[in-house]
Each structure stands twice: as C-alpha cells, then as structure tokens.
Length: 440
Image (cartoon, rainbow, N blue to C red; front, side, top):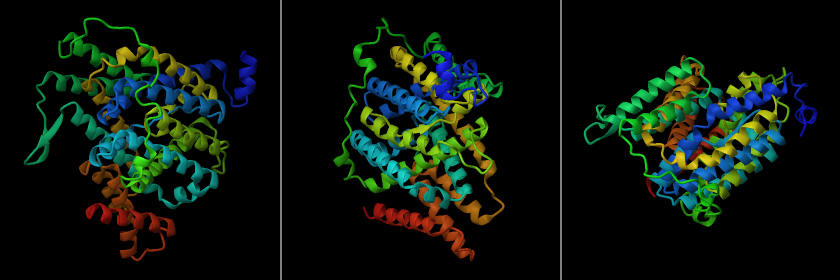
C-alpha cells in the first residue's frame, strides 16, 4: 500500500499526523510494551501452561488484536493479554481455586462473550457509569500493588515467614541483588524518559546474570522450531464445560469487570492525549474499539492466553506523534517479527522480569493521586480495595471488599442514594459470593 493510500485509509493528514510520525509511534509503542512477551508467558507457565506455547499464544493474540484495533477501529492503541488479569488467572484462578488452566481459558472465552454482549447492548455503559471514579482508580492501584507483590515474591525480595507471614528475603543472594539492580536501572531509564526502558532493563539484567554465572547458557542455542511459531500446546485447549464447575460466575464476573475498567480507562486516557476526544467527551469509534477488544478476548482464549486488553504503554507511541490506527499496525507487525526470538525469550530468568512487575506497580500506583481521601466514605472503600488485593493474594477479593464497603459506608453515613441501584446489585453479588466461598 502506497503512502497516499495509507493516508486515505487511516486519515493520517486529517488527524494532523504524518507517515513518519505514525511509523515512529508504532515502533515506540512496541518498544514500550514488548516486555510483555517475557512477563505474561512466565505467569502463564506458573499456571501450568507449556511456556513455549504460551509465548506463541501471547504474541499471536497481540498481533491479531492490535491489527484489529488499527485496521477496523483506527485507534493508535495496542492490545495484548493484560498483566493484571494474567496475574489473576495464574495466581488466583489456577492457584487459589486450583482450576485447570484449560478450564480457566474456558472462563476467559465466556467473559469475552459476556463483554461483547454488554458492549453491543450498551449495558456496559450503565455498569461503567455506576461505579464511581474514585473506586475505579482504587482498583487500578490495587492491581498495581498486587503485581508488585508478585514481582517481589518471584525474585526473592520477600519470602514467606511462619511468624510474620512475609519477610525480607536474603538480599545477599546474587539473583536478588541482580533483581534490585534491575529495579534501579529500569527506574532510572524510565525517569529519564528512555524509550524501551523496560525491555532494556530486562535484557541488561539477563546478560549480567549469564556474565556473573548466576545463570548458565545452554551449550547450543537452537533456531526456533516450527512449534515455536504456533501455540500447539494451548491452541483450542479451552474447556468451557469445565469452567462451569469452578464457581465460574465469580471468575467470569471478575474477568469482565477488570476488562471493562482497564479498557475504558486506557481508551479514554489515550484518546484525550491523542486529541481524539471531542469537547463533549465523546470518542468517535469507541464502540468499535470495545468490540475489537471483546472479540480479541475470545480469540485469546482459543489461542491459549488470558484476557486481551488495551495497553497504557500505547501513550508512548502517541507521545511520539502517532494519531491513527497505523501506529497499531506497525506495532503488530513488530510483534509478529518477534516470534523468531522465542528461543532467546526462554533464556530470560525470573529475576530479570521481576523488576518490570514491580515498576508496573509503581506506574499503576500513580492513580492514587486522583482518589478523594478527604471524603471518608470514599477513603474507606478505596483503602480496602487497595490493601486487600495483595494481602489476600486475590484481585477478586479486593473488588468485593471495595464494592461492599462503598455501599455499606454510604448507607451508614446517611447517603444511601449515592451508590445507585447497579452498585447495590454488584455489592450484593459479591456478598453472596463471599458467603458461598466461606461455606463452599
């Protein structure tokens, strides 16, 4: 496709951009978020999935979903399996609930269908509007603290302790020292605004791990086999009937709610930054973007990975000047090319990716500044949402505590009309679920 045809198809000039800016925006978006190729499959492997297949599934889902966002919705946003939802899938659904990952994928597929129905019928707008912004911010922060907690656990910064539950690990261990170095190195790069800071940090700490002898290089490094390019071990392994026997309503509800809030938050923030939002707050093409995401979630379950969601790192490409779906297309093509690097990806140790999880938590913590802690009827549910996610090792429990405490404190404060009927229904669902879990 020639430059003129690209301009007409993506309306590049109309959006005040240029072909060069769009390409650079796509490259920047890829560099800002390609760390997920290392991190997401690692969490899926913790859920019991074959890691090689999980890498391929993650990449193919990212390619297909991001192409859909660019070609159909014409949004400069990349879509991939989410970090927070992958943590929920690996450490709660497959960990706490002991659900086989095949059944977990079935739940992911059903959540995609639910999200599509909610989007098409516009019920999702009612749900989104019913949850106060303060609680939405708290959910983001809570997920960030949970991800950071997992990162610290994975690299040994914190360890289990029978007396205090958790305690400081052995920071003299070489792998822990390398993880700490990764936090400060990547943090320094982020502070300086270096493009691709997270991937640079991962690759640097991985190299140091091999140079210092903490990790050992294999005798030979084979070229990617045919299986490395396809998720043969996870493709169409989803078990929808199996999902029905594991409290699936609770799991699917959580998957759907996280997907709703993640996508709406990212799309609104990115659209505002890119100048795509109108003065009245309307975002042209938002429904297409949401439909793309819901279809992508169903596709991701078929491929063998978790819920696809819009990535906040897309803002990096917009900061480079990208304004149209061509940004997403360029990023998708770069992710496709990364399939050839899967043998190298398998060499990346947990202490190299753990700093990224911790720093993603830092970035998500920034939303706490928007919470109105001066209003105690907001402060209590926001606080409970944030702290219960990592302390109970459950994102879903954080949701429940947040919603129930919000309507409860509003009722006791004589402000029962503020939550609205939908919030009351959501809180009631969580309360029933907690009772069922206690007696299950």
